[in-house]
Image (cartoon, rainbow, N blue to C red; front, side, top):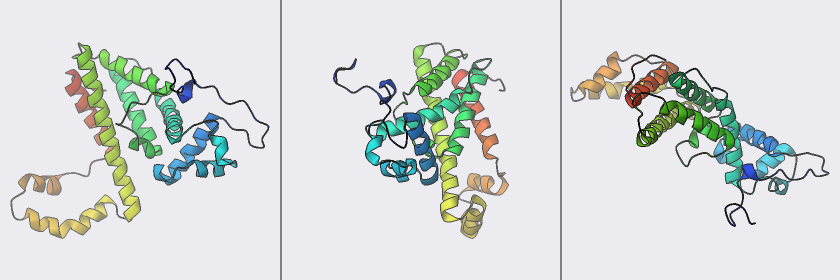
Length: 242
């Protein structure tokens, strides 16, 4: 196919929907994406397949290939649906409240759709809603004090993305581990308590001992917000509360 990119196929967002067919079950990319999201919410990305989605829709698997050519395009559509929810958080009054709104909403949707965190931190997401979120984020960062050049903006964007991907993956991995083992953090700590106490009593790990013995059980959301504040303060040189 000749396209603006030579003979490279058009991205899924730029290809028109297939013409409606005289079939018992009408399809669209949005319907396929919504069904795929529901499947991934229940079974994770490893349990996501064209065959399973087709079964949920009540159609043959080959019909889906009229709308998406491969699994990557399917994931692209799913991800952009999630970004549509994140995009609802903007615009805000100023750069800092915009960044807090976008990052907090990203955490919210990632906790609702845990598979989304598995797709963060790789290649950029380029769907229209993902681009809208990226534009809002970059524009807000570009207005922050301390961001005076394009190099500053690139580095700040990368650092913020790294914080977000790392924080979400850690939180979601803990949730998954608790579900798969039937053991939450408190139970795991209790099980390993005697061994850890023996090791701490050697005196070789005084700082870890302080963290374990005197450290509080921090609320995940409060910790996330505190760490986000710290990251933004460091990136921009500002010291304002959100």
